[in-house]
Amino acid sequence: PSNPSPPLHLNNLYLYASHTGAGLNDPLFTAARASAIPGFLNATDPAGAFQEFDLGNYWPYGFSFVYEPYAGWGAVQVNAGQGNAQGFGFVEVAGESVLVVESGTGEGEEWGGWLVCDWWHNAPQLFWRYNYYTPEDYPAPSSCADVDLVQVLI
Image (cartoon, rainbow, N blue to C red):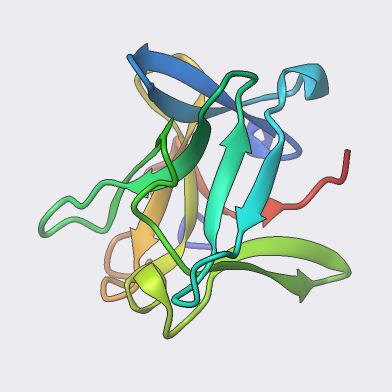
């Protein structure tokens, strides 16, 4: 991790969607498992799977990556539709299934990991790291932690 002393309260949290506009949400984290949103991989496109979520209404919602030029990381959104990020899959890390963007598919050449920060929603918020800027060159701020998104079956 690029932050040698990441905040401990950023561990063992569950992803939920915080409404920011019509069909738009920011992915935040909470300790309350009951608030977690169910997610699934939509692997119907041969170019790579989309990470989608069921927010309890008619539409699927997917991860969208926001690109910030000349930055070490960018925002992630959970928006109506399949999202703009493709190539998701799970890998085994220390006995757990961890969500990654697979190399060679969709955003896989650009994705460099997950970052969670205490940001502007008064709750931990999800960001994605750019692969071409190393965490050593762009270390996480003291309010952030490099994390794994671990699959929890419901």
